[in-house]
Length: 575
Image (cartoon, rainbow, N blue to C red; front, side, top):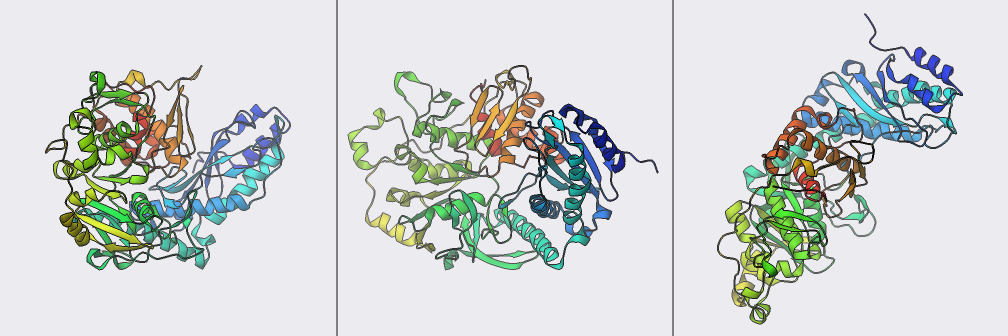
């Protein structure tokens, strides 16, 4: 049988030949190498020891890997298997001693996962093989090739890491049990989330969940101090049957308008954060494995200073001074209220069915206008229709539910279907009490904004406004952490897009914007139509659909994060 790649001996020979030469000589090793149990692809070789590391891939045939077919028999199981093996590969990369040299010499690594189980390009299982994509800093002294060190790295260290990580026979009994638990937990969470709509539920938190995190920058579960496990109020308890775990009981939040109330530091925002992150699956031991939310949930907040491009915010804001058109509202410096209105309308345009809002990050004048202020400032002098007067209409007219954390305005009792109180991190159903209070102390404020939610019009992005070039480069796109995309000459600020949880998502979103521009923006398609087409391509062909370069640092995102990034691109223009 003809070999489609070179032998490891050929790689070793090349490295010996280029030892001591200029760094660009490393280009000679680019290619495909057939090892005994896997194939190594050296796809891209860095041109400088200080440049981005070289890109490599390892493919292990499924029969050689030795994992039972049942472990990758469905998409959910494939994603979980790949995620577990990536974490194992990452761990072994960190344990291997690094080679000395200049810049990033000697480092082998992968795109490290966080608490969420995400579909990634760093590791995946297809119909033929397990593939891991890694980066490697090829050893150098100054800008001189260290061929012997590179040989140790590629011919000893790398096979050792792969051997310990990607073959069933190398896993001990404990790791095999952990792997099965990882797969079954992911599968159960997918099953649970898919079951929510039929039950009329938009979010579910299982009894026994641990929701508090260690800190605002550490998403691991809180372990020290007093940790209160979540328990559902009896009246909200629902049960689901999961394929692996069996029966599970927890709090189901029905579609409609839900308020989460309570004193400060009693757990309101912690619950909302768990619901927000419930669009993703979590690793076993995270504490939120079975806190799940419908996939179309969008977190909404005020975002002072953001740019807005021709968004119809007229359901919330009309009659601005100087005749500003709020049906096609544009600004380079939005206020708290106009940014929050734009964020809601953009989410509706993208197809949300659930808004998540915390009053701590909302614009006060957007949320409520009480009776006394109505008396002082008449409606014809106030452009803003507060959210309290639109939240019910969003559900009845558009089918968009809301979960709102609020502690400062009882006027929302009048429009709520459900009120949950958090008391020392314990949830209580206080809907009856809230309605009784609303009846006893009737609000004197007048409803504003009419009887219907109002119109919204999908926009048409203009292709020529999305220029990804910079200097001599036709395409220059890069992510910076979870909060920034550099797109050509422009910076996209994603700091207020709280449902982005990993830098690999940012990397992929930046590339997806360019993909949408080149493939689907024709001056006629609306933004929702473009989002549909991009997400369909990713669903069908994976994240490689948006970039032919076999990148290893992309992770799956939703249409809502893609829309949010596009809407924050400073150069965006719409028809």
